Every structure is written in structure tokens, then in C-alpha cells.
Image (cartoon, rainbow, N blue to C red; front, side):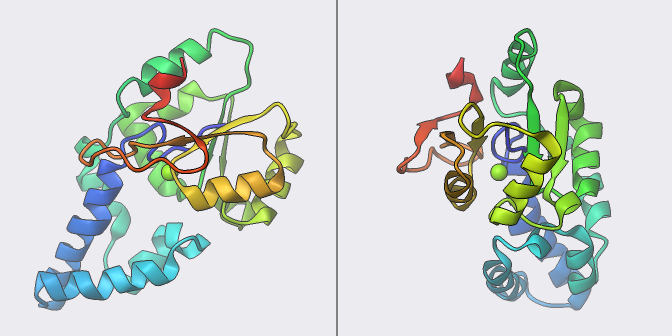
Length: 205
Ligand SMILES: [Mg+2]
């Protein structure tokens, strides 16, 4: 099971969108200074972190008064795989493994990313937490996923770049957990924590 953003795809796109582009567009629409818009939105982001609404495009479009999907589409050229990730997916496909994409991404963002990269073609199954109404950070999500996929936590490998998601998977009983320590190629590698870590999927081969 692989997470999408920051595990297969470069988180540089999402960070650019949410930390720079969206606040700039918001500032422009409201006639605010960009710094002021950033402070206002970063505080809001902090408050929403880990909740399903945080990943919901409709929520943000309504809150910001901006067409966030359109903003994503306009910047689609910035969407890309992490180094070696596509090669990893192609190699795994040669083995008898069921490969699942397990993401908190909103379905519309997933579609935009698929249009830019063809990511969906690499997976045997795709699950967004929006289909279950619960984020990966919750136990509810993992119960619903097991219901849908019937996987065995003892023989499942799950890779993600978000520690609170790995904590949730660990609590559910998934035994093999790997953290991606460089989810964003525009940033240096993060400090490694308690989970087994690789810079990127390429290092799992
Ligand atoms: Mg991620």
C-alpha cells in the first residue's frame, strides 16, 4: 500500500499550491497583503490538519471563495513523480503483489494528478479516504479499508510520508511500515523518526 502525495508524487507541487499559490491568489482576490493572507491561512491550515475537511477541495473552495480545482489544473505542469518512483511501480508490477494506492487526496485532485502522470494505471486498487468519509489518521479508515480489500495487516507493507498517518496504521496493526524521509524534492531530507525510513521508494528496491 502506497500513499500518493509525498510517497509516489512529489510533494513540491502541493507545498507550492498551499503555501504559496493559494495564499497569493487569496490575497489578490481579497485585496490583502500576501504576508497577511499567509498568516491567516497558515493558522487555518494548522487547525484543520489531519481532518478530512483538510483534504476536501470543496471545503477550501467555499472557505477561500476561490476555485481551488481550477488553480490546481492551471499548475498541472508542476505535478510529477518523485525520483525513481515510476520505475519502482513498473518493477513491482512484474511481481505477484497486489499494489494499492491509499490516499487522503480529494478525488478531483487525484483525477488532475492522474491526467498529468497516468498514476492510476500502476495500481490494482485505489482508495481515497473520501470514499470512506474518514481520513487515514482515523481507525475508522483502516477498518473500512480492510472491509473493502480484506488485507492481512501482518503481511501488508504500507509506505507514507506523514507520521500521524503511520501512527494510525501502526495502531491498527499494520506491521511493516516505512516512512519516506524526502517527500518534497525542493526541501532537504527530513529527520528520521521511529519508523524504518527511506529517502524515496527507489530505496526499497
Ligand atoms: Mg503523503
